[in-house]
Image 1 (cartoon, one colour):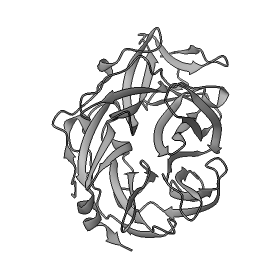
Image 2 (image 1 turned 30 degrees about the vertical axis):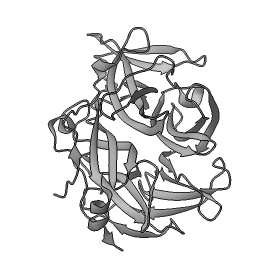
Image 3 (image 1 turned 45 degrees about the vertical axis):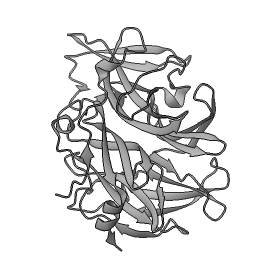
Image 4 (image 1 turned 180 degrees about the vertical axis):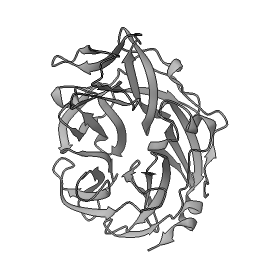
Amino acid sequence: MMDIATRFDTNPLLRPSDLRPWYEGMEIACLLNPGVFRMNGRIWLLLRVAERPLLHPDKVRIPVYDPDGQVKVLEFDSSDPDLDTSDPRVIKYRGRQYLTTLSYLRLVSSEDGIHFNEDPLYPPVVGQGELEAFGIEDCRVACFDDGYYLTYTMVSPFAVGVGLRVTCDFRRFETKGMIFPPHNKDCALFEERIGGRYYALHRPSSPELGGNYIWLAESPDRLHWGNHKCIAVNRPGNWDSVRIGAGASPIKTPEGWLVIYHGADESNRYCLGAMLLDLEDPSLVLARVVEPIMEPIACYEKQGFFGNVVFTNGHIVDGDRLIIYYGASDEVICGASFSISEIMAILNRQ
């Protein structure tokens, strides 16, 4: 095992009970992997908050957004033989899938990076329209001179794709719609242009041919993307054997772009790894870790809504110190720090 994370002594930093539900008649089931950024001298987390209807002894209740953006609840009889509730995250009913929770995004901030509070001046970011009827998830925040670019997962009965919203103050947002079509997620933008072009990591999925791999795309404007290239694949028999996906925006170092990514195996155990991309041509993978840099070993990472998970969408860089905020066991928010030079030292050069 090569877990080099220094976990915060105060973990978990946030639990579902630390926030009040936003929707009437609902409860917060999970807080999940936040986008992270600095603004006004503070560290901000854009939490994914997953709410669900209050439990009923004889019913399975599923929340969705209706066409007007209001939450409605679908009900199924718990005893219905056509109902498959084996996965706590997704239920299956007569050939259709539904999420057991409805996710949206919520802002909290901190002066010390440990104690976070919510400011009522910043409203939640919620799903809009039929392509976000099952909510929005797993936001990455990229900081540019012209604002903050939020890439997130749009979830609906139709499919899963990548949405984009832009803001300068997190009070007013410009919605750009879906920028990567289904099935796609885990989109992280590079925070500067390379050779005059913008770049993004993303994760299309192919259930029949190929797999859940990390791809690179380029764009003239951050809206229209092309020249897609697959740059990293799963490794059979390893900790990242089934799926991989990018974390937050790549970190520029003198040796290359450092990418923190997640990987999962056949048992849905999620760990964090790292790879290094060429500075001038980020389609070239220069190095990749053999063992994960972080594994679910703490009790709050092994047990929860969906256990054995560490998953990050966001980080803060402070010199050699990398502070990662992550979701543990799909339920609580935690923090950990790393030495960037230590990560670089264990990368296996290609």
